[in-house]
Image (cartoon, rainbow, N blue to C red; front, side, top):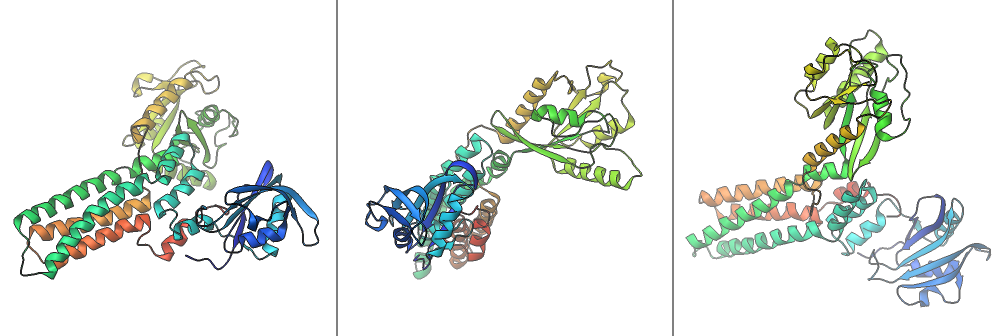
Length: 451
């Protein structure tokens, strides 16, 4: 792809920082850099991958900031185009002044993900690798970061390439049989084709099986803290995240809406949700709060059911325990610092804690960690497909299944070839060999500007 325009954007977050970076890419990148930069060497005359020291100046020659300017010439740059990166002092002023100056000289403000999009369109990376760039930026823990890094290095793409190669070779053989109909496909070739289809299907199913675990690893487990009013849910929430995030009061109904926080538990990301107390109420606001609590409970991966052991077990407690029976959950017997009045023998393996004093929290965290490990499986994963990838794989598997059935039923080779092409097209959607502009727009819209 040959870009007609040159784009520019801040590659670092605005705000107080030691350094700000402005990225420039396109056919006029070096010419624009020549116009704004003052140093011993013009950027257009600098060697590839060299760094120059100087100043960026305004139109009248006034210095905007002292900078380091890096030159990366096409096609060896990230985007495959001429790229200039300007490192200046951080803060709100200097980076924006320099960006404004680049736009004055002919650059256009980059759209979200446009640098990575150009890298894909110029063949520097495939689409699965491009998506990994976004995953690296959004990684919430070290394990998710390592997983995204492996995908950026081509882990998923290499697996798909091996499957594509086999299916393409089988497609060529089938099309050769179609071109020479007098030579019918013999039993040996039919058996080899069936084995190839089965093997490709098995490999795709293995990849498909990584979707759920990968989603948990990337996005974290949704953990809802539920229980009737005033059992100490908010105190437990604050104790788990280690700060006073929620107002705690002895008055029931203090929490009216779901409050969320994310925290890292030994490499596992947990999204914790403090909910309003469950139970009947004639108050419209409290009724809506209960509805939201139930919705959170329904959608969560794990529920923490909090019981106040300083009071007898109520019918509301029993209703909530029945509600979570079919969902992974832990029963948290709170307020053990007070005299016990609840019959703990009625509870299933309760974890005794005092959210106020912190007693038992380590035991609770160990149970949560074990549940996270069960959901995610092994701590190390080679690849994990996204929801988009999984949908493409499902469609490819359906096409392979139709091809297998046609082969077993002795149907036309044209039908088999058509389904093999479809399977290859669906796999190609993952890596970008077969992808529409609408899909690209949707993928790169998730990126931040400057990436």
